[in-house]
Length: 246
Length: 276
Image (tube, rainbow over all chains, first blue to last red; front, top):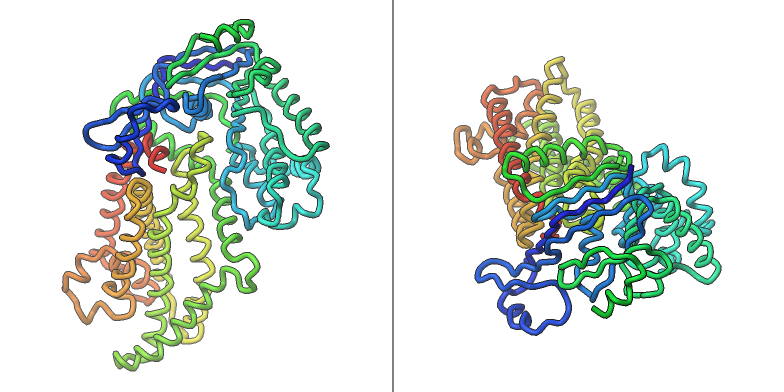
């Protein structure tokens, strides 16, 4: 039984890589982002999520809306298991597919095939599963002879096709997405849209963050708004307009 | 490693649960050993892609150094070639292993930032990746020792196998050092430079080129952990007994080091991803 339960989730980022004093000057008057706390000593801390609670059951498709830096991506990454909560609890039952950043820092000098293998293993497939799916992934990518060449010889579009083909080859119960993924040229876009839709349909739960109201309307059944790390209650998609206006 | 299907994360529940979680991270990392090996192997492929010798470049470099330094220093120190060359061959190979594991440890987590930020993969996977990568390099280097031993007909006894015990203990020590270095380097960006400088300095302060007998009892030797690591592998290979003191030191160092490194890991594991 797949479910997502989040209660009172808070995540804070200490920001180490900046000069505190210069940053403090800019804290006042920021219109985007989570709440930046000007700690008197130590690094500045961003409260990316503050007491977020939500509960999702099979069949739920949740859309996350909110300004840049309101915490949408942080929430998605937390659901992917990358961030440990500072407070609260997070539980995800089911296999997670995290389609957040497809570039995933894999070696550019490795060939397309090596990239597929490594990405698939990072995504959680066993070596055996990778072997079984290799042909299908390679074929869907449509990269043919390029698969034997290093990734750095690929155009940005070709790299995205490869990454997409691997990322969508895993079976998942919970799909996490930061904006609806759209890659490649016209013909690939159509095929990839179908593949992504199939993956999402097969999953029990989808959580997608988007700035595009139409995306939210077409794929989601529920919606939640984040603002400076605080979350609205999860409401039905019918109430999207009210939520945006609020 | 297959996809995990039950993820539970919560705020810190106190020290005890943090330790348990830290342990679980290590357990999950060992379970994912196939992924570790794939990542390490890919690193080697990437580094030497397109080169004819590949990872044997390190072997060739070390071999040339062994030959050159062997001929030169055996004269300077007036030691016989057949005593000195095997000595320095082992010294250089083991030192390369020690130094590379620690120096590469500095980027173990930094290099994995993209993956750590969007998956639930346990952090120690990327520590093991560095360790395995250097074992693979070491395997290529062992050829030098084999060739030198055959050429100079260095006698081996069953006791030489004790050097394998030494190797395991050294490896255990290197991993905890690499773990500490990896955590520190992700938080403080000066650490990689400091570590590189220290290892450079340590090369000359450790009896790699010169025999420890010449300065027996000097603190440079007795207080130098790298001396004991080197000695634990080199002495048995050259037919000496594994010194009791050496064994005691590296076993205690491994135990104390791992306790400290693990405690540091357990108390920073939630933060490491934010450091990156």
